[in-house]
Image: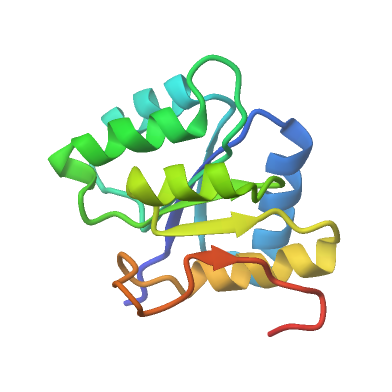
Length: 148
């Protein structure tokens, strides 16, 4: 019996959440996606989940608690110590990259500017299997339209 992949996405932009879900449905209809529009809602959702997600994706710039603060809170919890967490942002400023790495992010995925590239990002996310190991893969994931 095949188990479906479970992804939890926190992003305050409704359009970004909709596009990610649409791309996911095109790539893999069996994946379970749970979305939240802010970090506090994400934490409440995760608190109620009996089965942990296979991947947590966090936008950085959200109202209230930002994605980096949420990341830090998740990493403080033993419950999420082995859950892969990816930052998902349009901004790949060096300061954000350093903070995300320091606070325990496994990946920093740049939001693509095209839908076709978003589907490639989704495919990458579906292939994540556990936490990234040191020197295993690149921390920064910036998929171009001609990759994969």
